[in-house]
Image 1: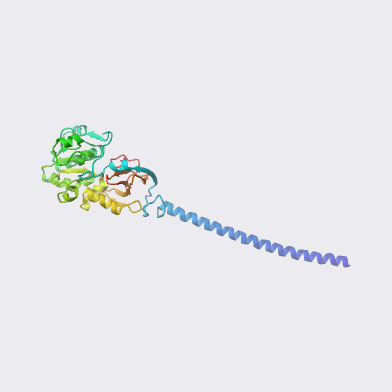
Image 2: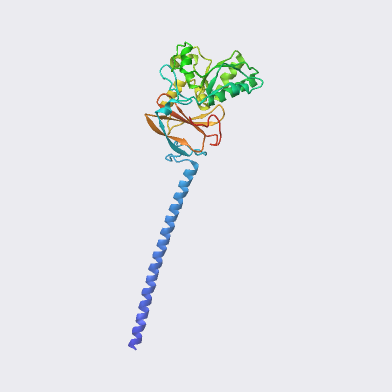
Length: 328
């Protein structure tokens, strides 16, 4: 009898302990499951938040979004080294009485204007002798003068002078000595216009083609040159648009960029061509590292004043091949 009672007591006791252990084990498993679900939810939420910022370009700390601006068209950046040599070539180099031009080792960037001019039939402008310009500047001025003739019916604007070598500048007996003429850049040309309607059209439309009047009559104290308002300088559409809208000569514009623009604070410009541009200025003290886009066309230009300017066209794909596409 006692043996049966002992066995019965032990069975009941073991069963109670087992059920209690099972409840504790179930509770622990439940808590672990809840914890795992919470961790999963936190991770999922973090991934979604990061994905949102990356895809929308809203993260101000993202190195691929140096401006910190909200933009549906995210610029993908890479880096590129630049040296002092890069500061003395390009569309924005200043050449004047205090900024001497650094002649390149070769003149590969210079193109004779004859073939473009001769391709027009009938002729849409006149051409001086041995006119050479930087490739982008020549393409732009040819298009500008062709459009001027179509718009006004006047086809007698003369592309009178353009690139000058050191010796050619010395030979003309100008007060501007060799080495200090903007004609050395191959981006300055003289346009002889003897028609009011044609001149008015140029005044209104030159920026659309990337040109500004290099020596405005009221800027002689900045440029060092007066009485040469027929000289048009190619600087690119974004810069020509901003300079024209704000009455800035090239010297003033570069000073503005140096003081106000950098890779965290770009200058955004809607160009006269309707495209959107962002402009970044970098000081270069011997050497520097700059950001350049991988998915939009851009240019890099020196200022001949200690810096370089990166201009990004955000209204075009990197596959476009226009004068604004090629770096340098």
